[in-house]
Length: 252
Picture 1 (cartoon, rainbow, N blue to C red):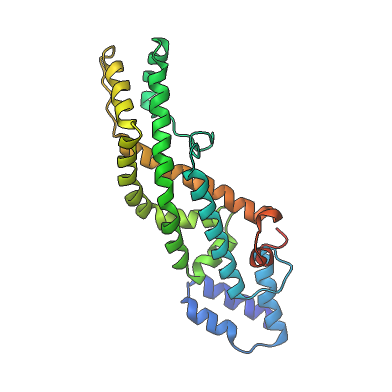
Picture 2: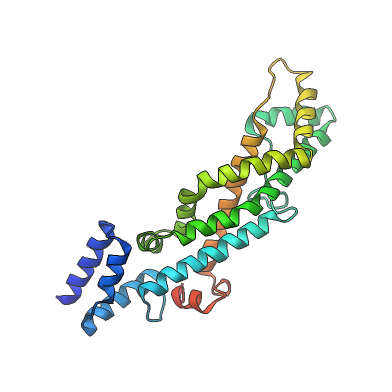
């Protein structure tokens, strides 16, 4: 009966989002051996670990996994060809411009489209460097309730948490970097050249906001990469590069 009451209390505390400190204080109170075993077994069941776990282990492990995953994602995508050579995140021309691209290629001006695509990806690679510190701040601010929700969620629950916590800040940080970068790498020039040539043959002119489009696609790419890193840590033992990660995600 005591075990059942303990599980019920855990469920009520989580569902009502009791402040993290109160929950920690409660878990630190003296308990019978059976109650302690129930809490530990519940944490082990959720994480999949074979080791004894504390709430501190779980939260610290999740934060470490996010720090490693987000830093790795930022490093990978900010390298030359980080976006351009990665089919999963490569930025292509906007959907409304696909006919433009096809028309230009049919007219022997495919290099204009190629230059525009390359320069957009170079801008995204430049902006990806700004992601890591923003992710880090969101990880520092993670509450116990956030961590519990991530543990009980899907294989990309941590990515979803960061997307919800950082999208606005990332957009704000990325946009000026991308605006500057597309000028630096010549994206604006290529874009203007591309559509200036196309508009000579088209009755319907195209002039979308290039900076907004590249910013949106860069964010999409970084969360795709982050989700992949999260799945890797959860499922691939080789990706658990620290003792804490191996303890928390041990048998997954």
